[in-house]
Length: 559
Image 1 (spheres, rainbow, N blue to C red):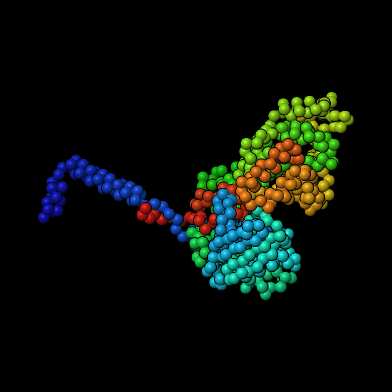
Image 2: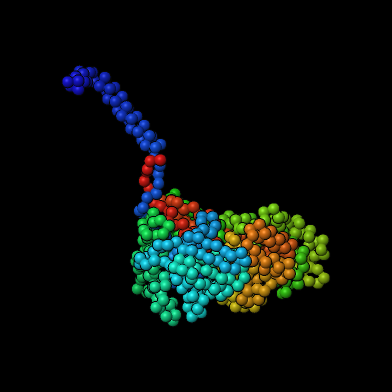
């Protein structure tokens, strides 16, 4: 009856009163809904949930999706990172973390590493991962008939199994960076052991692999010429470290970066594995585009060959050229600001970087004074000379736009200090065969791929002055050699840091090269993909190290 009375009362109201009652009633409902929604939001939180599809484009073709062969291909390395797992891996800051390893130890003399695997890890075909798989993988690498590019770094390591889940690595000498080698993806012995070495490179499993990583191979598509068009992976729900959130990852392959960017703009792909700074502007119109700036220890420098140029043999010349280098201007002009200045073989995000050491920051006045005070006088043409030796340098550079533009800027900058620079641009094959291998250059603009936990031995020890060594400056310093040799065997972090610092002091004093910059690695991903927290990596494929934590779909749950 009460409800009926309210209806009769409402009907008896004037129109104006009805409108007011309806308005305030509606307002009350809206307010109630608002407070209920607010209460829901306050008492719950957004969390990832399984689902979604991510498509990434790569300007390359896969050939060997195989951890013992993938080092020379961008596409191979990216896919290998998702399909295979190593004993160790990297976190978002590039720090080493355990993956398939449950535990590890090293002997007191630093020469014997013992690693215990997690039990119950499954290959994508359901078989269990064991220590025999680890042993088999290293045996493949060490056998020259398999043609693995990793063979050289494993030749001084003896690998043995202790039991089903335990493996030992015996080194001839202690090496502080050995665990970095164990990020290597492990091959399934039961799949590969019956494939003869001569058929290893041709095996179907190189493009349809079985691994133990967070994603498993599902399908691929090729065109009539045999070029890979797409490659589909599915989340491996039995992944030992927890099932990935994103259900499906698909890679599309393109002939070059321009075509890839066009595909991104047409929304064919949600991400681009790498983009050069000059092409960033073509992506800025997309509000949904997120560009991740990732630190990678790639350092570009001008390496001096003092045996080929008299002027460069003078300490003050090398030092003056470093002061005459406006690194910030080069980074802005060549990299659109996407990079950081380099003053030595160490960058701020690398282990052992000595931030307090005085760096040769740009000072053209100091550069000119240094040369003038040491007898390098300008001639009528503005070029300096001393005792009949001209400050003229031929700068050899790869035929790569970023580096040729850098060389042109150095020509101008060093010209302000009275140096005459001629730029010699060489194609990749010509550069390697006729310049780098025989060390036939006066100055070489080139890059070196270091590691976050740096081992400078290969690049700076005098034993690597000649081909196939990587000491491009032909640097020969006894104190540096002693530091670099003992550094490799030092397991005490504090002593290691002291050696890193001492080596940087020598580089600043000797100036065997003018260090220029480290380009930022630019990774483009649509903003619908969340959970990407990568900051620093040793190499680009490791940006995918924590892909299992990325997500697209979400849900709200109680706090």
